[in-house]
Length: 128
Image: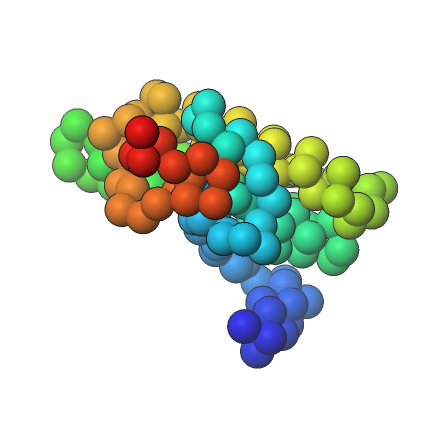
């Protein structure tokens, strides 16, 4: 993990893009927040990188179009250069990212391929 983080920071310092999946379960070390109406554990890393190194988060999604081509949808960058990487600001950034992810899931529900327990550490919707 530490080598991965060093590589990510190096790539960002070189002006390169880094792609990170955001809808993954962060386990017990994550930040518990709402996701699609249920409490879920969220990775803080993307928000931390953005706030600490002042790099934008550019939400992007790949989806299959009706003609079977792959379409990439990108959204305006999320960047708060004047914010510190406090827990409160991490939550605010992740809420912005989540809003876009949820919007895309609601717009194209058949495109979201989910195979893990996203809500395992917040609320297990399948245990009821």
